[in-house]
Image 1 (cartoon, rainbow, N blue to C red):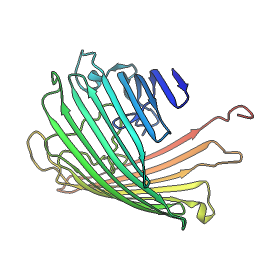
Image 2 (tube, one colour):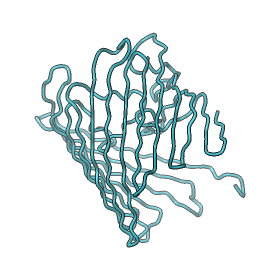
Image 3 (cartoon, one colour):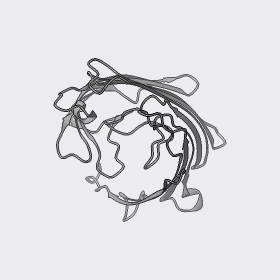
Image 4 (spheres, helix red, strand yellow):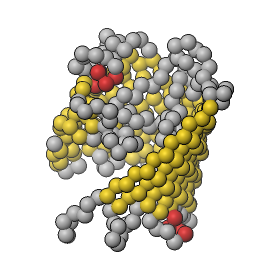
Length: 296
């Protein structure tokens, strides 16, 4: 259920969510769904969300379970309370922060600062920084732990072409748990997310829209992320370094007979050192959005 009044929204019951660490994480065409009750505002430059998430249906589960159970605590009906905001600041800066309090499990606080500048010449600039703190709270039903992560990113764009370079660093005393959705990590790719204990990663992310080359329905993305200093959080033993290469090609007509069609082709290759070997994955996805009523 969704009710709107002016710029405010009230959301209730089961639906997709779009928050850091609590989101649909729709990477296999089977989105995660949450049961939540929240009030918020977005699109105003002074946005906020305040609410409580009670249950979740993961992509490999046919029914809803409590947030605590999804995190690994059996027979506990505990939820996650959320409070966050995002502000549009002067000089094209944007700052946001959110805390997600899992009762008697763990609390996650995430913040980021972004700067995006569009020049009259067609060039654009991007700078970003992010930070995550996660730690056990209350009865600590998942054990006592804390973990942190941070990252920085810079980018350039020009007439549909873009390049971003990011560096991320995760503490080696534990993983950042993410049982409720995808990670906002700057260096997250299709398979590996660059968020293992102790992992430092540097990534190059390229995007291209082919309109400039006479192909307005085609676009592509390439991501290469190298991660090192990964450790086993329990034993402290070093783990294999890794490099992931992602390639994505999209076909999305905006008009004509095939308007509403979205064809996505993806390939990923991951190479591990220390004799661990490699792995690869291909995905072919077809979406079609049915046209709405005439005049809609």
